[in-house]
Amino acid sequence: MQVIDRRTAMAIVPLLRLAFRPFFLAGCLLALLAIPLWLAALSGAISSWQPAGGWLAWHRHELLFGFALAIIAGFLLTAVQTWTGRPGISGRPLAALALLWLFARLAWLANVPWPLLAVLELAFPLAVAALMGFTLWKVRQKRNYPIVFVLLLLTAADGLSVFGLVDGHEGWQRQGVLTGIWLVAAMMGLIGGRIIPFFTQRGLGRVNAVAAWPWLDRLLLVGSPLVALLYAAGPALNPNVWVGLLFAVLAAGHLLRLVRWHDRALWRVPLLWSLHLAYGWLAVACVGMALWHFGVPVNPSLAVHCLTIGAMGGLILAMIARVTLGHTGRALEPPSGMTLAFILLNLACLSRVALVLLFPLGALWLAGLCWALAFALYAWRYGPMLLRTRVDGHPG
Image (cartoon, rainbow, N blue to C red; front, side, top):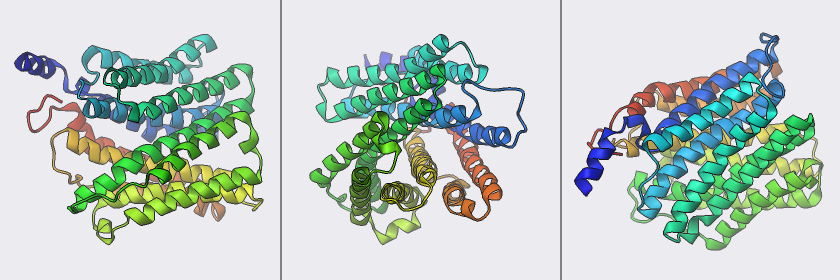
């Protein structure tokens, strides 16, 4: 039976053997194209063509529910195979799921009628949640059920965003995206809390990883979804001392994690310092939001971009750089150019949240250029790995 299974797996085109392959590649291609397209639209270079809801709505939506959700899907639908010991999605079903994601992206750009757009858009996160839930339920792996819950909440946030588009209510569209962003932050806290100390231990050859503090894990697991729900319900949209206190608690929790995980040797390993810096931007985003809710005159958009560029973009780039190496049978040494990609991604965040205060237009373009180059480097150096069979002959 194992021989037949291996032959069947090896007959599948490499791009469709595991979910990380098509979704990491497609997500990064979207990332490197979306920001230059948004900046071109912002500058007025694209005026005769409007995606669904306009360029601002498209920019908000696609970097979250297009790019980030693709990477999340690729990671989870690959990891669940390891977690449960059951085969992950591959072959034609994986191709169908990837095409569903692609059709939704094209539907936004083509400004198709809203019923079709809504069906295409919401079908993808629902399908990912269903696949995850079914696989976990088959082995009764309750530890990972919260991931399915967050995916379902993300679908609901996406639905709110689409409904705001249909109703012409820009505030609801924005509200849905902000809700989704903090749900992704919850996912980053949940997954990051597992993989960052583990990757650090393995990468530095330490005997044991830093032991988790269950109370802190539970606090952060509840806190970020609570923030997301407060955005969905409305209280987090305006300065609110109680919401500020919640953000302050989250910031302290994330910073405490970073202090506990820290090892001076990690700064010599790009695959590690990139992860830690990305998680650090998550803490900075929480600090920024806490200050705004406490009445400090800071622009909350800066905190949001700390989260989306530095934390979300940074953690995605660092994670997929490592995961791709491991799942294609390669040594955990990033190819040339990836250290530069990690630097560029952090420079993009620094430009968008700090330099923009001094040089608004120039900093925006610098941030966009650095972001696009960072993901272009990933696509260039890792694309061939994703398109080819594993170097160790394994069918994955």
